[in-house]
Image 1 (cartoon, rainbow, N blue to C red):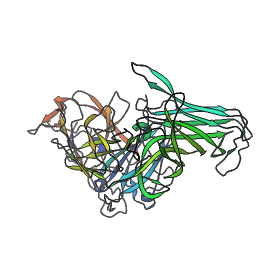
Image 2: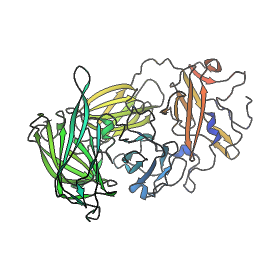
Image 3: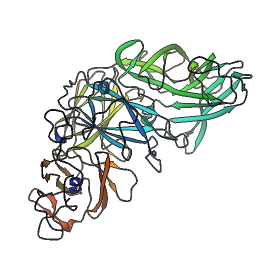
Image 4: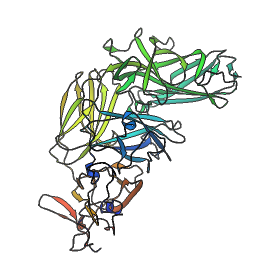
Amino acid sequence: MKKHNYYLIVLGLIGFIGLFLSCSKPFEGVTAIVSNSYIKQRISVQVIDANPKATNPYPASPSITLSGDAVKKGLIYTGDGEALTETPGIAKLVSNTITLAIKPNTIISNASPLKFSIEASAAGFITNTQDVVVRSSDSLQYVQIKLLKPSSLPTGVSITAAQDNSVVNGTSSSPFVVKVVSSEPIQGGGSVPQTQVQATIPAATVFKDKLGAVINKSNLAINIGNYSSSSPDAVESIGGGINNVLTSTDPAPKTLILAGALKITASLGGTDVKSFSNPVSVESFVDAQVFNPVTQSNLKEGDTVPVWSKDEGSNVWVAEPSVTIVKDPSTGRLKANVPITHLSWWCFGWFQPICLPLTILYTSPKFSNKQISVLAFSSEGNQFLAAKTQSIWNLGLFFMDLPKLNYTLKIYEGLGTYNQRLITTVNLKSCTSTLTINDNPPANPNPSLYFDLQTSCKDGVFRYTGPIDYKLSTDTKWQSFTPSSGGTLTTTLLEWNKTYDFRIIYKGTEFSRSRQVVQSEFRQNSAGVWSYWGKTTVQQTFFNAPTNCQ
């Protein structure tokens, strides 16, 4: 491979970036934008199957819709400079992925962050919505929107679909019971079926549509989902999430200390059901380890728990009549009897005020960029509260919105918890303001590889900044690679003699390459960092250099 004279030396792994990076301004009409390195805040979004054990982790042909004040004000762009609106379909996913950017020169304070929502949907999956919070220090966040496939659910989610032929011309002729059952592990191995939800539709119930009109049809189809308060996969599948959200009782954002969550949908003769003439009694069984922040103890018989509902697409949880926890006479388990009057998301738990953001200072003797995932749980009850993943350097800051509650943080290297290194577990008092994490990773046998992504073009120089994905060529799921910052990166994620796929989503196109990392083709400098030379005495690029930048 001959070196092209009209290119600056590309020392690293992803010389293929020049195949698609144009030196033209990615944010046309925006002052001071020369290249995408001027973007200060990015959000790498990926739509995935909520079940981490799914054979194919990517729902086919998903779509997303953005909403919220930041979108209305024209502050949300794609990573390559296209302004986005709330119009459905305008934000286009490529291979289930999109990089969003905050309009450059937008003033964001850590006390008053930008907020917007992303709704994701795909055929055969349950639509989900996730809120995104962006502060000035959030240079690169990673957001996974998890969609549930009813036939393959993650731990903590149980869904039942049922049919009822007793409903004729919009009215039930006899009581109808629907149960949600899950397989719970037992001591010594194996599992036992356990009822999580039981809904009873009384006789003479009239079914109505969203306008309140009676649905004069027959054949009721009903779906009921139950979501565990301790499972991150389950809680992150609740539409709109439970952290930093709004309620009908207070304009200030809150976090829900969850006891239980339900989603019920139904249709009659193909028409969606919205409400009933009589309340539907829903018994929802509750984990005995749920923590009650009012009594400062685990939930018990006689406790009063607030109830909330939220329509799909809404960002406000509406207060409903509270319920009293009772003990099921046949099993001794705790349960809440919730009278459901309309179909939407329902949850019961306690919305707590959000403290000033927790500021985490990340320190590490390894001066390189990493992805850090922080998961927060209530200390006493182990209820899942919030999660955030961002790219961070040594001495970087990480902000989290957490409720007024004692909590436990589990901090991982990488995206999420699966097959990632647990850095530390920390117990903190309510409204702790600062925390320093000293990450001293174990000795890494992988080589330290330096990559320079600079590309020289006829109209200037482009240096890519942003997320990169990679995986072993034999794997199906993409992982987050070390991101490029100002056109360079140093990584220890690759092993000698293994073949990897790499990709970047840019200008609506996926650009990918596959390469084997062979030690004989690299040279090490005095600092122990390797750069690619290839099989000749003239320094080469890891991939063929492009012929132009268009």
